[in-house]
Image (cartoon, rainbow, N blue to C red; front, top):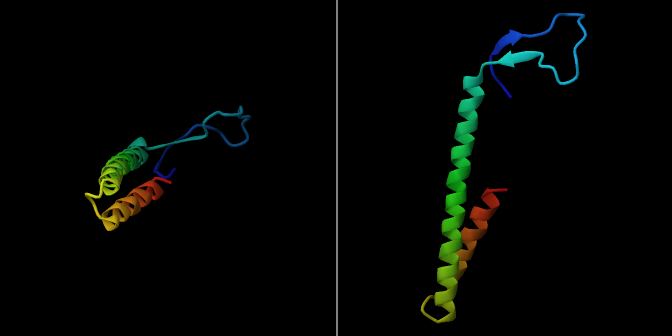
Length: 87
C-alpha cells in the first residue's frame, strides 16, 4: 500500500507486540485506489455477464441455424476474453 506517512506509533528500541501498527498512512490515497479497482472489477463482471448471455443467445440461434457459425465463434471469443480479463 502506498501513501503519505501520517503517524509513527512506535519508539526506537521499544518492545512492540506482534500485529501492533507501527505506522499509519493517509487513507484517502489508497481508499481512492481501492474504489477505482472495485469499479473496474464491477465493470469487468458486467462485461462477462453480457458476454455469457450473448454467447448463450448466439449458440442457441446457431443450433437452430438462425445465426452463422462465425457469429457464434465471435461471441465465444468475446466470452473467453471477458473471462480472461477477470483473472
